[in-house]
Image (cartoon, rainbow, N blue to C red; front, side, top):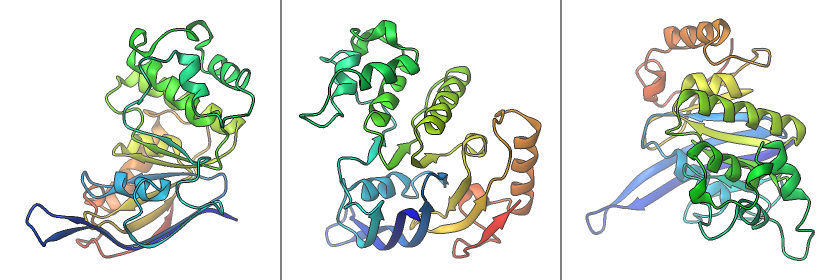
Length: 261
């Protein structure tokens, strides 16, 4: 069963010149099965964040249809982690995570247990300004998982972190995903990061974005980001498709393909 069905005929933004618009997405179609970890990789500015905003329901000005685990776009149970943690500075760590829980439900227990798994049990009553950037992202990740969403969207969540901190958070994310299975759609520019995390990578063209390669990743887990298996697969992909990270296959961004390596 698919947790996510996406068919976007067209997404436009009004341009700077009056009366003109810019196509951000066009003829973009894919599905993600339940509990799959899928990554989106594409050139800067191709519309990856726009796509997540549409799936989450934050942006509804689009021609097309989105089905998220049988829920309407924007349903509260869809998890979304942004490029920045977006924590409330006047709330404690505990309160920031509890903020995601539905009103009327149990407030004590779920947040604390999850924060303990994130190795933050000593910081429950700390404020975001007292935490490092990596710790703030752990809180944001806990806030996403605390509702056990059927679909979790992550938009370059470990951007700007140093390599050790980012790798630690990737490991925590995978541990949470294994213990609390959900369907993940993860945006990244980093091919190694995608190869470390994903069951499958959807490579996007330049704007207007569409899928140019649908790549299954069959490497056994756990995977080391600098390991030989990831590097060999990365080289093989780029040898076959030298302009893949620019959104091109065979010199064109209009080709769609599926591949297994």
